Image (tube, rainbow, N blue to C red):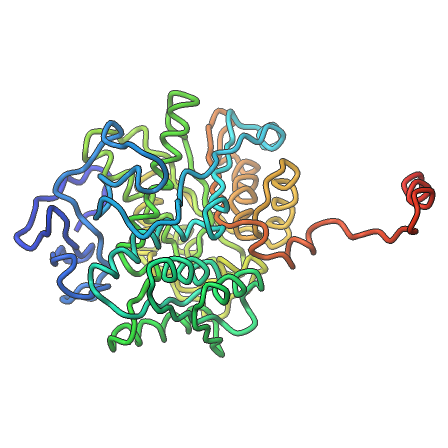
Length: 419
């Protein structure tokens, strides 16, 4: 199955359900979407994508939030907490400092649970209801668990989350806990957690809602659609480039799918597709390694470390979808240091926008690529920030200013300020 931008719109197979089906990106085998629980291809174990017999253009969208784009999704509505429609902030000082034509920050931290994961869960939990499963599960560096717990709770379903012990920010664990998830802390990293959850799902013990699940990525497509509509409204043009953090590479895959479908529908010219540009932390950069080496697949990193916990992932499961997305759009991938991430987090906060460390990787990566001359001064760029500042309050406190002790009277405060 070709993931090229120039691929033809697929023909409806016999096993399609109301114009929707699953298709393997490796061998092209097709499957009915809701007859059985399925995450990968029965024939070759390749990744699956959701396909549609009819693809919409911008004229078909109406409403607000993720479900404005229902014509590009498997259902008309989902289990919803009013997700999507996140801000596309102007950042004039950062724009001038980076030295490009336009810079906008798409802040996914303004979703209901504070991250982009809500977009995937509104669709994924709706599919779980269609399939009639009883328990939802995920492996998580934090944001997925918070979103799964909230949307599972909203849908009246049991949720189970597996987290790497001692490696998840307190704010994210608190969310999963309050929303009623059963939390298991695993002696291992994120990739070990995902291995276990996949085993549990394979044994029918739970419905997997990590980004290996093709339906979750359908909700995440809407980030790209909102960015395009925002730029078209403000600049009468699509962005030249979208820079985004890469963990499991789900967003890179989802945005590329959104753009491919628009091209196939005739709603977007190939030359107007933004360059997808991935950013990873230096201590967890298998996608960058693959791009730099011209490899067709990633090499799993067993040992990963970065303060950007949301992208501390050594085996991005969506790499087979994301690598073509970066290459076909003319994008690239870059690794940045934890120090560069923290500096970018502070500078984004200086524009009044609070993001967690992994989110700031996009701006750190843009700066690096601009310094290397890969990003031109005439480019219009959207940087995706994926999670809210309060997802990781400890990191925010460490990056911010220290409290200053003062006397308990006005005179003492004034004297301290004058000093």
